[in-house]
Image (tube, rainbow, N blue to C red; front, side, top):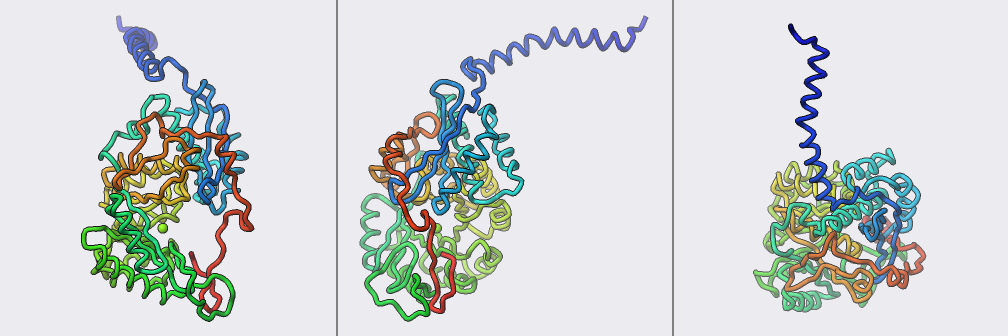
Length: 444
Ligand SMILES: [Mg+2]
């Protein structure tokens, strides 16, 4: 006699439950082992640590969990609008996240990203970065592993870095570059002052100011064009063929001037020219590509996928140079690295003084785990910074080394941080203005 269908299903369910029970028990046991018998941590508090140990406002988010001694730090540094990041974290993300489990980093990133409805702005992205990187730190501390292990392990032993050589005159730049080379750096970014003008990356206060129709900081595109090109010629001649030269154009020329500059720089065999165009002019990268083979790095101002996607997918740049916290932290930047690998674009994450040491460690971690790593920008940490951020990435012979401690490997001394508060300034750390001789304001 056939078994009625309902009974058959019931008996089948009963039989499979018997078979599956040991499997569930096994899975539970594995999960318990992986979490060391502890339940998933929950977010108990979120706070913001602010300090200015080196003349630049730094912002770090701290997530504290309900498990004793388990917490993490994430970089949320947007130095020019630092006062806006703190309330974005405290007034919006904190109430949204309290009580949530720290285990689901991707889910938390996506839900924070979506919770403002309007998104991809630098304040909100930096706030999310603080949360994202703090969660990675927590996961590393739970696993008793550095974050690079959680992200697949090292592709290389250490991270080839470039340092900045600046000076008012060409010979000053050459002297400073030689000192850096003597310290072991193989890659040098060179910037020279512009007499009487407000150049980028180097000042020149000795020359008379040219005539202008205003009294604000003054810039002249043609003067910059000629001086920067001359700098590359001098540096290549004086420093030799072996050193890698980099230069930051800082989006200060017109699009056509930028195309010309990249073309004329070709004989100097640059490692890369940085930011020849502003994000508003990215369609001109096609023209640079059509005219020359000078390697191009771009992206420190990007905060939307719509900005980096076409440049990577059309192979219009050689190095993607996103500022990790500006893009939303370690998680989205890792996806950018993976996308770039598919198209032969290498990484050169933004790494000057307006990144906290936690952010620098996130940079170095991504450098280590990404096959398509290109180079890492380096800026030194002074004693005051190292007293606050204990465990900064170390530089030796021009290579940056990651911490082998769990998480990011950095502990923050909050008392030391409180001793280096934001300094008072009329613009609260914001940048001023730079104008052409006729008074037109420029991107700086
Ligand atoms: Mg730059």
